[in-house]
Image (cartoon, rainbow, N blue to C red; front, side):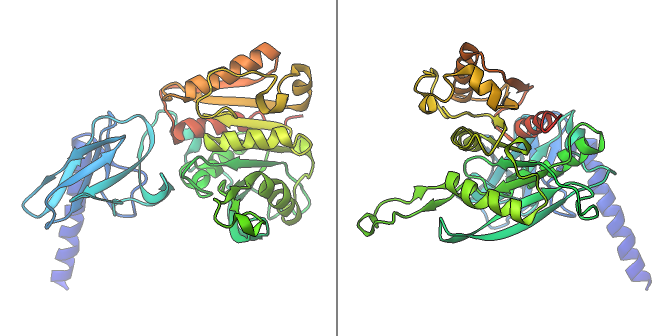
Length: 385
């Protein structure tokens, strides 16, 4: 019994020592770490430190922010290394072991860059708006459905606001919210914290309680013509959204099933998709949010309104009557081509006298903190009387 107590005592002391060391040199475990894992760690100035036991490896690198950093092995075979300061916000990263890129077992896994991999959170001064707080919380449910258009099973995640399950009479407006390229339907609730953002806004009285639908923007089908069997699948997400997702949500959830109470938004590729969807279906949606992208994504720097989207933005007065909210968001550190494409779209809106809200996320690039801030701003504008 005494040996067991001594083991527990020294184990606690050891763990406390690790924690104190991590904090004494300015590094703290990331909020994205797997339970009980001390690495990766983040310093006050945004450096990321990773560590992994790989005694038989010859070379290990930390791959983050488009750069690889050599790690150093100690006498126990544990490799440790750190990056230069990273921008505040969420970052995908991986470890490279003898030329093979692998996720870091120290973190939870996130789907991005076309794979399941590691993520690290560099704390931001304003992170309180997506923090887990002692407020009423909604529910994120996983919904499976069979798509006849794609001949495949699909899924979406649906956020229902606090009180949805108890008050069985109230109906709610709906925001359809799309991810970006090489991401999927898990992004907005995991990396984006959309549910926590809305929980906090609703609790503060800043946003109308709403349902949020987060589906997968990749949807394709083969041609119906047997002669085209060798052609590439055709994208059909717009058809899936209008003909399958919206009717399913209206049939399964207590929605306010009309255009005045439907909004659609997306980031990057999702912004391109949602803008085309709403402009081709103005009878279905009344508000649009385009985060880090527009229909001229990714590179058009000049837009002719007479031909852009079949001239749908050519009549400013008509567009203003159609949209309750037209929101554009962009990070101040976004790389090319995003400032140029969004800037060209804004110039076109200005020339046509089209009303819109433009928000810039300070100090962020093409990443999740930009889009979290966009959603926080956009959601406050929706469904107001």
